[in-house]
Image (cartoon, rainbow, N blue to C red; front, top):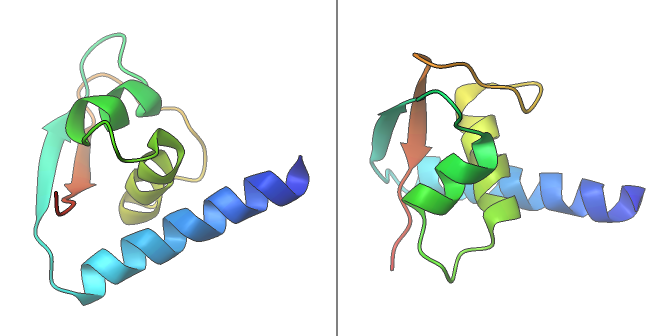
Length: 82
């Protein structure tokens, strides 16, 4: 279980780092009431993208230590190539 979590975190960090290094643009999103990192990831990424990796990429780019987001908070959303 811990190994799976660490692998997901590492994949998210690698994914976010690759996008930043490649100069990919970022979008932004203002958190709405009821949003979660998972719902934001599902809303902004294609169905082929693993939501766990997308959540970790959003966390990494925004420097989030936990998984809690608040309404009105502005998040940078790394773009993915489809």
